[in-house]
Amino acid sequence: MKDAKPVVFIVDDDPSVRKSLERLLQSVGLAARSFDSAAHFLQSGHGQETGCLVLDVRMPEISGLELQEKLTRAGILLPVVFVSGHGTVPMSVRAMKAGATDFLLKPFDEQDLLDAVYRAIERCRQERAQREETRGIEEKIRALTPKEHEVFLWVIAGLPNKNIADKLATAEKTVKVHRASIMKKMGAQSVADLVRMADSAGIRPARAT
Image (tube, rainbow, N blue to C red; front, side):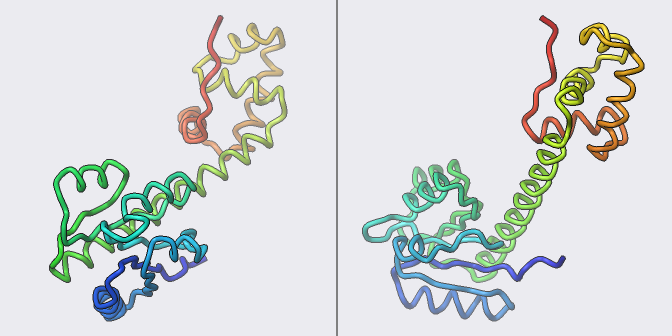
């Protein structure tokens, strides 16, 4: 299925800035929605769309940096492009450490802003694709039987079938059957595939005691 058209959310308390940014983004075919405060953006319920946030740093009540922190705590991973007329080095460092993709000073070059927005949208797409892949892997792992899950943990630890059989006090042939079933259910072609999937899902291999 084709991705939905990305949306660029503009949060700035200056109406002239909001209008000019909307026109700029729409001129290159991007959907733009603007808000005059961080509070109004939070109340809108947006943030799950593919896109990014163009965010002023200094705003009344809730600053851009505070909004960024609120979104992170809420699990809304919308990439942020900060724009500011009064930016400082500590401010930009704080924003970038918190995950902002860019920090531009007003007045900024229009192409610099567009480039920053495109980078942020691409990052959003990649992060969402990664989360979807991880969810799919987690579903496959949950589909394993308890015994298959046990074998799975030893397989990703690098143990051969004979050693796994010894660990589980079962026949090597039984381990082979479980292993084949695991590979099929997980859609894996090799142990390396299983290790990568486990790592993506935050699963750690079994360890000998």
